[in-house]
Length: 72
Image (cartoon, rainbow, N blue to C red):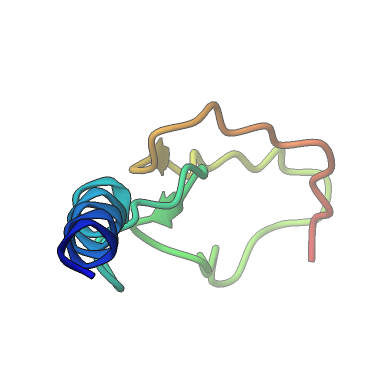
């Protein structure tokens, strides 16, 4: 009986030592951060070339891939 109890206790300790507590896992993923999502050029003359830079930052821990951009 003592041997079975010792084996059960060892198994419990091993399981506790190798498990990850709930909520402690970090998810590996990119995380896009845009400081601004829109820009208003106001009134412009026809034929004017308009340009504006949107700053995109990756705050995640994996590479961020931007595969498609659609102007509004």
